[in-house]
Length: 216
Image (tube, rainbow, N blue to C red; front, side, top):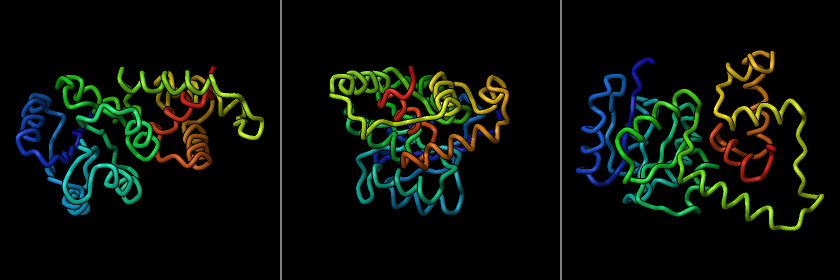
């Protein structure tokens, strides 16, 4: 894999330095930006764009929630990993559907942070046990509600298969091979679904699909 350029936004300097130091052994990861808040991050990435951002939520000035949305809008190719102390499912749902590609807690081991960076770069998202528990809880809660025909989501067989394979962590190229279609067609289906449901990226689409029982 080519060199991965990383930015980290966190108002605690010691934490930033600790994360950078813990990943220094991985020579394909290079931290190019440090920022204390969202305003500083946005200013810096306008000058040098990273591949991925490690984003704290609680920061002075522009916080991580608003910054995630703005980065997603202004720099759609930049991927965002939330790295926070907030173990709250409301944050997970909101952020994963509004531009975040993964959600990590600050007690994560350095190897998990490294794994998350790699998976986000390859697949476009990272779902750990914490996020999967949130998805499961939301799915179970939805199953208890009374179904409504007016709110039913109708998908074509091809759309269902693309979503199913995405949720199984296949890349667009791998999905294309399995379905015997072109990678461009896979990307077109993904883009169409994200636009239809108002989602920002593949992570949001996967999260939305599982939460709304779009796959068997």
